[in-house]
Image 1: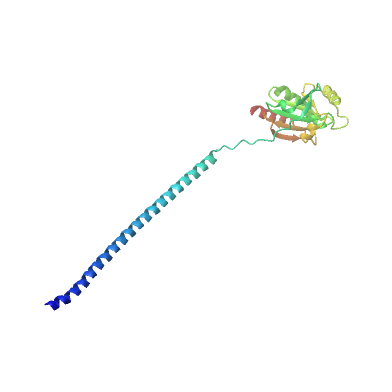
Image 2 (image 1 turned 120 degrees about the horizontal axis):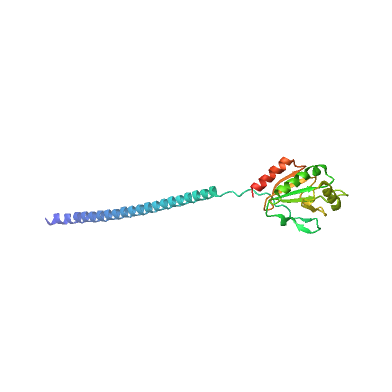
Length: 224
């Protein structure tokens, strides 16, 4: 009997060690699995958070882009403007120097002419008629191209105006030819149409037919 006990003790000891070892191993495995699950859960939550942030960022970007697009579509394009007329100097019939810009504030028609110019002489009566009809609504600036010919002087121009019965027209003189140069009057007559701000709307060279002159003046008055 004692012999049997002596043989069983080692066997029981080994079995006990095996059971304890197995318990420790199972406990470690359980802890590792829990840690893995926790890490996986945290990783998933972080990924979800990143996705949510990305979605939010995309939404904000889309919203911003949409707002910008709407803002661009909602902007009214500015009206097209012509170049400003040069602010030149003129001599009136009394010899006083005036600035062209002093005439701005309402539509202005500038006509550069000479007494030696047949097309100018042809259209001058139309301008007188137009001035009498629209002179209170439109500035008429009739610039004599003084010096355009050696004999084109203020005295020569005044003699022509008196002879032709055109003395009612507002006449100005370009004694230094600065207006002829500034307005590129390479041929006569040259006519410019300005709006009330002094911006050039139209330009033409050669005589203006009466019908066309009155049509333009009607448009100028209507657009005030």
